Image (cartoon, rainbow, N blue to C red):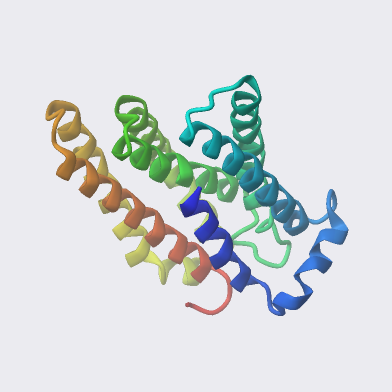
Length: 213
């Protein structure tokens, strides 16, 4: 939840005039940005209360209900975020691949972090499966981007290549972690590598707008 809170703070920089941020709540149900804000607030509240209850060892029915409700809201939130980028004016963003790749990002990075913080087997499984799915989708994604704007897509070749290499290294790291069950250092490095891979992919994605970052 601390990482999520940090992400929300960073996300406020998307807003041109932060003092008018509340105006974005007026279009809930119609505006993807408004939906994202409401869902992020709901997830933070439910997840924070649930995590606090678990931290205090109060696994009451109410606490468990909050945790499950937070998980449901979190899934809806993950789907809502990429809808913001389905802009008619940005052909390289407006595709189902944008939604798929953005949903895979928290599975790849989140799975690795979950493994690092204790949910080792399930976290590694989720992360590696998400990486493999991303590799399967990559050819179609690249073809879609090239058909939308070949020059702009070609300019991101180094970022996409770096992402692919780092994700492949992440898979190798997962295999090593599976064999060396006590290797915390390898597990931490694997998490860093796959998160760096997704950051590279996200930089390439934002560079597909109009002006490179």
